[in-house]
Length: 158
Image 1: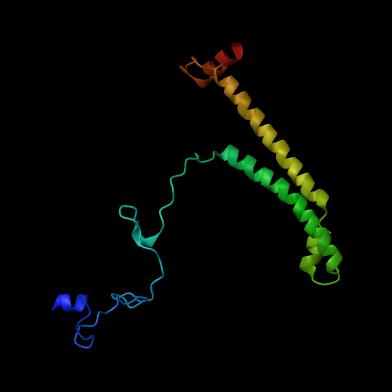
Image 2: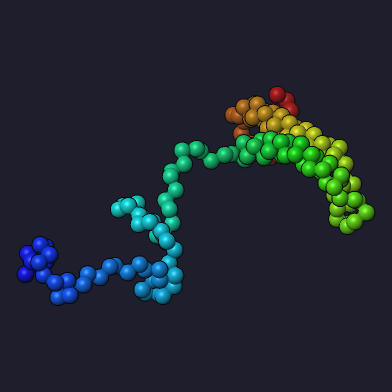
């Protein structure tokens, strides 16, 4: 009988109908709609259907590097901010809302001053940290014995 079907000698009415696999838009367990995702390759699947992120070869930034990165980002965006501020001044009259007026009345010199202050503070912090590192070796080898008065006297005598 299978040979007759393969050669198509038998009527199609008598042959069993082949059913297509249903496209499952809904989960058979919960009945909720499933998102159309591709099947993960064997061994690479993660719980929850999330894609596996490639391992990051970059080391995490230290606080100092992060501060330098953010400061440079602020300096770059400062120019754009001033450009958009000028465009806004020409487009919208200042007579309108108080929020807009307060934004436009702030002078660009205020922002530049704040950036300079931040740069100065960062430079002071860096110099203090450098001094602390150099002075660390100066007090090495000294032990506090007895009272703090004797210890401080020994430090001052050096």
